[in-house]
Image: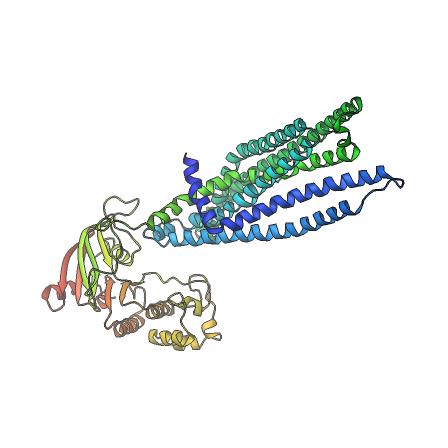
Length: 578
């Protein structure tokens, strides 16, 4: 039951996304296999008949030769069409699956889970999607072709004797599927161990490369290298075990094929002897050397399509594990598409009125792995156009409150309503790409003129114009090539490009020098006019953007202070200057 629950979301996605193309590809694959068997059998029958006819007997060579040419051409073009359709359908389904999963990581809490274990989840995301390719290409398609081959072989031999045809059909299914299921059962635990070993090997290789300086200083570099080598040997042993299973499956299919041909040869010989003993039977016209050659060649080719299943059987364990990992995320996506009944649950909305930007009612948030709540039953209303600063020591819930307003976190209790917001996080996220494409993350449709205007507003225009390639300047991973101040200004330019009237600023000038910080804050204040601000900070210069201070302690709002009151000035004086 558990396996069926894991398979159902993945198979449903396959059917919804590419059902017709997948069925067409499987049908073409089956037709190609049948055409190949018919080509081999017809050729044998034709050659044998022509040899026996000799020159003294009239023999129509045009019909069988035309059939052979037609089957050969059909097999060639059918193979091309089958490969095109099946791979196009598979890539389409996997592309839809990637989109669904990436959208899933944009849901509340998912992005934070990804950041906690980035390498492990990234390997699973890429490796598991690749593993799902085997479900269709190496299991479903070969299975349909193999069943079609068994049916054709049974029908051909049934024309000689119905008992022979039935025995052939049952034998092919028993041997073909028996070997496939046996290999799948033996390979599954090995394939699962191999996947886990590969994940550990990749993770430790990344740790070794990223932390080699620290490991060398601590004297742990040789030990880490030895551990990596042991993991590599473990992976090699699993690969060798799977290779042995693959070789053994090939040997079993070969033995099965030889037994099949030998059995058909004996059966045809027995039928020929029976016809010779009873020449008056009607079977005398049906059974002869050409018919025997046709039967033998069909039997020779009948088990070959089952052999194509062995690779899918080897990878079945990996595909099953991939479905187990992917299915919960797909189920969450399906559940998220079902609207909740009015008045129940929590969520991010568009506000409860035209004058409200953010409304929290008894909002409570728990972080996985931590005891106690990060936010305790918080009640808060921020009006449109209001500037609010959240202050307090580290770990009291300032960033959690911003993440809740941004929709990156879901409240486990209470209600959350917020207008669409743009979040300037503490860490500037820049990617190994051009300056232009890093900016267009905020607005993919932005023109170069809009990009330059945003850079000018952020105070970065002159720096970018000084680069040889301008907007086409390539950045390294994490924004390598820009200084800390330039990276922050680029993040500010993205903030200005994003069309949102609600800004969430999480320590926007942290780690900047005084002059750069003052310039960034002045530009933020200039462009924040008319916008709603929610700033998380412990610096006085950043809190100065707000007219309202929320003092947080232990996940609760301890004080709500307004500018112009003595308490506001006193709280402002307790903040750090730099």
